[in-house]
Length: 149
Image 1 (cartoon, rainbow, N blue to C red):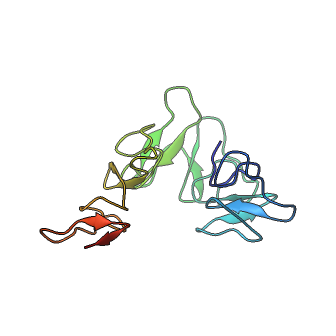
Image 2: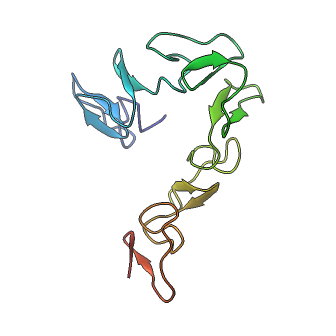
């Protein structure tokens, strides 16, 4: 499941959202955040969701992807067409997508959960990505809790 959007497993497996709330970016809320739109009882990114492409309930056809809110067979510049191996096709930004970091299907894990420039990093302790991607600590500094010290 996707714990960022699954109402029955919001933020963690088995953590169900109360009635009237939706799972948005891994937290139960009455509204959708992170650039997503409330579509029925879930939050959807209408720029990339093939079931809600451009608007809620606008579904892309078989073999099509939702790229920048439009159904088609190609992705916008900077994104890669993934899912050609038999799965549902989709567009991914291999530089920032935690589920397709550096390549389709390459998932960042709990040891390095954030995709930074095509590589997985732990922004709480990575001196080259401290606190956020691209924030490099100065010489002789360490990254602790997302801060250069």
